[in-house]
Amino acid sequence: MTSKDNASIHASAVLVGDVAVLIKGPSGSGKSKLAFALILAGRAGQIPATTLIGDDRLILWAEGGSLHAKGAPELAGMIEIYGLGIRTCKAIATSKVGLVVDLAASDAERLPPPKALKTVISGVELPRIPVAKGHDPLPLVVGFLTTT
Image (cartoon, rainbow, N blue to C red):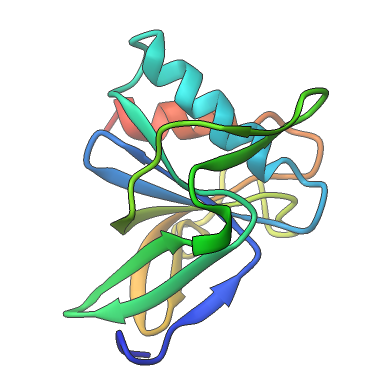
């Protein structure tokens, strides 16, 4: 996939400091909820400043050995907040993806094997956090971003 060959996927993404977090999962798995929780954690100073890239629909492409993401133009700056509906917030146009979070992942484990902590999208290998259905992904993502 090149910048001329973009793929639209059902996902959300936020930029945390200089790491774009791509949030994947089935409908209703909490993609928007996690994106907003990360934005709030950034505002609270628990993690670096966090900005929305896109919610619900993203466009991905590989270029120069990196995976890039941008929000769908028709949804720019919009995020769903359960109980409030569709809201607007500060957003950036595009970023290079540095982490993939897979919600409701069937291979999520307490101590995942190293191969489960990586994924390949459009030929680009990326760090991955598999999250079991029903588990809160926020501590895992914050842990990834703040520990070694």
